[in-house]
Amino acid sequence: MENKLGLTENEIIKVEDQIFELKSKLVDYRFTFDTDGFGINYLIRLHDFLFGDLYYNAGKISERYLDADKEIIDENIKRIVDLIKSHDDDISYIVELIQDLINNQIFDDGNSRTINLFFNIVIDCYLQEESDYKKELKDALENRSKSRKW
Image (cartoon, rainbow, N blue to C red; front, side, top):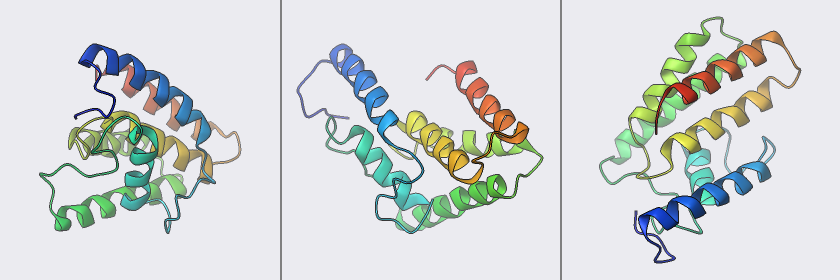
């Protein structure tokens, strides 16, 4: 994406990492972005919050997606959220569904970081107590992130 600051690719990567780290610490599950819950609209606004100071296309779904695709993405997100809320035992399946969202490149940049943060927020919202399930799910997401080079 074209950056608002006119920085080179190497420069913007450093700035982007710093801003993402700071802004991701500001968001928790109570930060609603005036949406009706955890779905595509929340994800879009989270992306804009994280990257809007840097990129013109922040908070916008990639141009290759149509409005119908947006509805399908929203359904997939809500399905994953429901699995997390219900403490579904198949954690590897949940992680696989999240990886599918990441692989679809919903956003032109910052896709994996936004989706990972989004689902960590969902986990913190619906699994508030320190349970074995919450720890196992967060560990599985973190391990998947570490095993991939973005």
